[in-house]
Length: 206
Image 1 (spheres, rainbow, N blue to C red):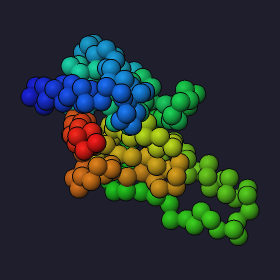
Image 2 (spheres, one colour; image 1 turned 30 degrees about the vertical axis):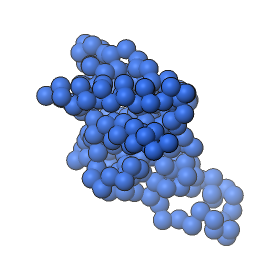
Image 3 (cartoon, rainbow, N blue to C red; image 1 turned 90 degrees about the horizontal axis):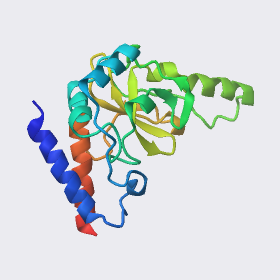
Image 4 (cartoon, rainbow, N blue to C red; image 1 turned 45 degrees about the horizontal axis):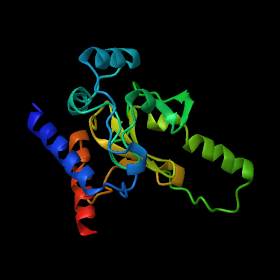
């Protein structure tokens, strides 16, 4: 079903790597254009059963035929086992990835985060509530954008399969990814290919 698109991704990734021998592209020094080993169907099923989820079909195809992490947008693709955690770089709090993803449109709190009338304790309580993992339920983190921002795969609900950004670290909420100027919402393989196209174009301009 995805054979032609996966073939294009492999070819474009080779082109991108050839254009960037010094690894100047943002994040390249981190992933070095290398892919983590592919997963077997059995490993995917075991992961899904463990976390009581069903991965989107195009992401499953990527895991089976391209890799389970490594070269990708920003600081690279995270392995699924790492993406289940709520906070980048900390494996002490799980995200409720099997719970319902509750948003269909961009979400944020309408607060004046610079309101000096509130006491520090009030702001601490608001901050704790705003960053609660319940808001990111149903999301599997797939890439670290940097500055506390993560790119995520929606696992259930009407937006299942779409890529959404969690930018609560900068008080910008959770919203569909449009970082490369796309007007339509992106599914995983579309998102990955757009990164390849954007990166190849960027390096050609240098």
